[in-house]
Image (cartoon, rainbow, N blue to C red; front, top):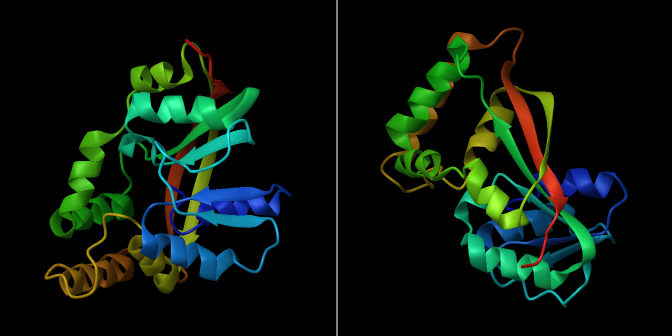
Length: 209
């Protein structure tokens, strides 16, 4: 799903009209609060397998860090239904370095300690073969260096916007927030910490059959 609208906001900034499909009410409402004033933004209560969008109505299908949640075959059928003939899809991932720098190693340990859902998500990450089946054959890959830099409030907001973060009231929420503060204070330089990523974009037309 489109989550809280981070990728949606970037697409809107490029001049696109975006229909953001998200099944989670809380995330959908967060995106609506953030982007609802933009005329080219539309919010849709749907899933990858049942978007509710009209047939042959979509020029480009973009999925940001969510493909691992999809039922691959059902999502493929729905994508073929809503995409215009010959239209493309793009599946995006932010990939962390294999050898984590100290801040990211401590942040990773924090997630594994206090966010059980994170461990399950890591285990579910989509593999290249499942993406190839989604496209119905060959796909292209483009990679881009990508860094995200945050002060503490930005770092906190980034963590809380994820699907795996414990919510307020959860027994892990307060320990996680205290741990996040400790990790930030240990590694911040000039008031910020940095996530180095490599962004992977798998893209191409979906082939019927």
